[in-house]
Length: 417
Image (cartoon, rainbow, N blue to C red; front, side):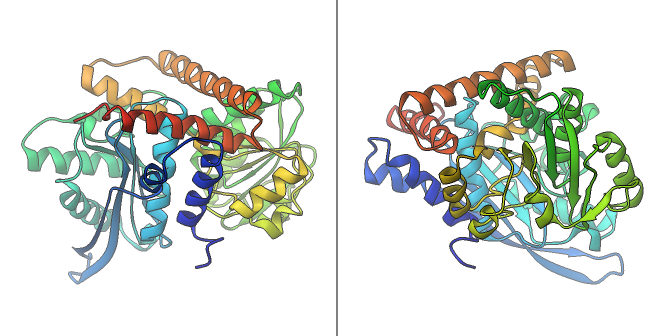
């Protein structure tokens, strides 16, 4: 894997870019670029035919200076040690950008969940929860859903942990079903923050999001919800894609109709009269707003040279390589970084954790109001830093804000034992 394609190398380069504008000790910077610990484990579980299979799993705890480690668990064939290290680092700085009192964590199992039955996935998930048990806890490390996981898997982990610990601890994990202590608004949170980030950016640029053309790469939870909420603001979603390919209609798609079509058929392809396009063609469409909402490294330096969108709002983690960032900054394309734009997920996870600790349930209206206040406040802080310190782009500004908060917590001895 080249450095350009290695998400952990991308993370370290982003930290170095921001550190150039900070007065931080080299030793502190080294700490800021490396996880505190990484669990790498082999999980053996029983298949439905009685055979045993062993798969590799990971949990990275990146930085706990500002609070318990926090971050998702993904099931994907591409899960590697470096990937979870990078994602846990992005989580640490994401929490700091929006001033949520968490550190960064991330986990994953290197499988394609489509290859397994629900019973097999439950046995595998419970096996992973057993391995995670010494590391996680309401005040230690609080996992959440990520790629190819959701409420079902979170409920299994919660139940396994509570059974082994002989306790009730709903705050050990977030992204749970409502009846298991989940929060209103959690499923929509990442897409909602993506919409809010786009709305605030267009307002700051004195542009109107109404009638803006939008292309969404990756039509899973975050991408499809962001598309629908942007459509509610009057934007025109003209293209969408998933792993099977993409669709394009210059007259506009029905964002929720595309989501329904994907739910029925398993793909966005074949929706209505929309033309078929590739993911690469979608990423280079001449649109006002591009929302990359799939996996890391969707746009490298070569592809960035062909990107025509005026504004890019990163709903995925690490969709642009550092080389792509350089190209887009040079061209004056506005990139709203992942560590801010998709922070709605962890923000509402924090709200869920607070509700679990207080044993008090918030309404969806309150959750969404608190999320909007958090995201708009964080955007104002990023813009103030960008404009006040003459920084090259919004990503660097976001990291400057985040790193300062983490360094301050570290130098003050941290907020948690």
